[in-house]
Length: 99
Image 1 (tube, rainbow, N blue to C red):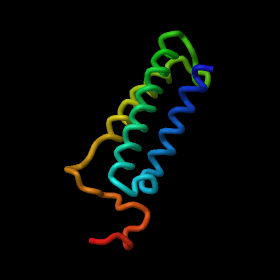
Image 2 (cartoon, one colour):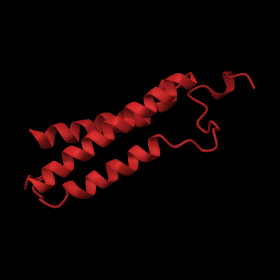
Image 3 (tube, rainbow, N blue to C red):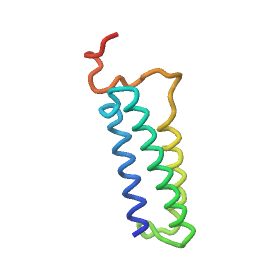
Image 4 (cartoon, rainbow, N blue to C red):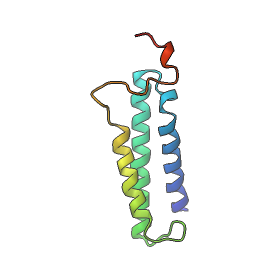
């Protein structure tokens, strides 16, 4: 059960990550989405560490939970990074935005 919940949270974070352009029409929405992704990833990594140290298995392997937890932490850090405050993605409709 714990394994399924932690993997589900990782999946939700990845879906949010892929749809950040759609969700970030304003700066406030972008910051909120980044914080939600980071929170989900940190929570998921905590659960994955719990799975690893309690002897649980993911997909039949007892050693895969810890690397997934570390990857989840990296995704959390990457989700809150801004590159000098510039917008790189430009959202879903870059030609419609005023310059």
